[in-house]
Image (cartoon, rainbow, N blue to C red; front, side, top):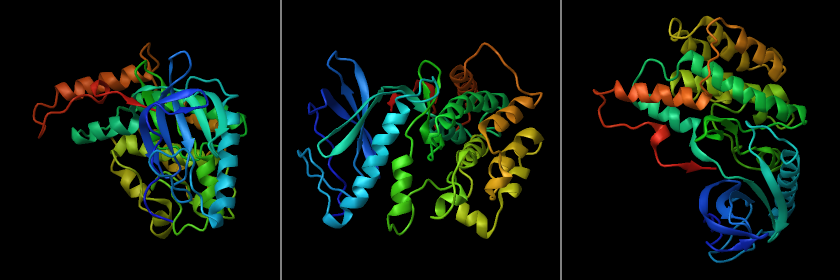
Length: 338
């Protein structure tokens, strides 16, 4: 099979009654489009199309799947469809809303709310480039992940796992909500069942058990990723990936440099979440929520998480006259959509 990435659907293509406007993003397991429904409302349309298993020529609708890849392709497709069915039953402001899901063109499409704003990753990169001691204030981190964990707790209550939590999959909307996007159930099925040279995980956020085919995953697997996200919010870059940590773990050393910058409690929370042994981590989101809200530095204000993040960036930008190049707030950058 050609190594060329599958071509996206063309603008004005109609699938399931939705009109494609343009491609928003693409990855190893599919594409996301901006589309409009029959009433002209904007939606995000996610298409299952794993580039390792399928190809598609420009202008075509149907993917081409080699016979030896067909069973694995269908297995991932089934998982993607079931993920859409499960997400459609969840209604929570911190979980992406699935409005519809359907089969067409020998694949599956998931219709979601169209979000405008920027990812947490965008904010981290902007803050890191401003070269500040703190990437985020501790109160901002605690507020942000309190909101994210409320959504994740609902996901787990529905017997689902996210399996791809990372800063790029935490979206800060223009109306100041933190939303979990881009769930990874189909990706995980293909990683476990396919004979890939290397699992397709985001280094630093995937728990050690995700690299083992015989390992049991549970809430503790997503909690490891939450710890990785908090780490990135503190240091500005991801932690070392799990296989590297199993060989030589420097997590505690990296976090020790933040003593006095962040509270001992927050540092210990990250170490707890990112324990290499799954049984040594919080076993439920509720347990982690209790610890994150326990610290005396936790302050509840009338500001939303998004407002806190943008207020911090406005302050950072105005204080960074000596920066090597002009920088604008991630919140005021061009809108990013998921």
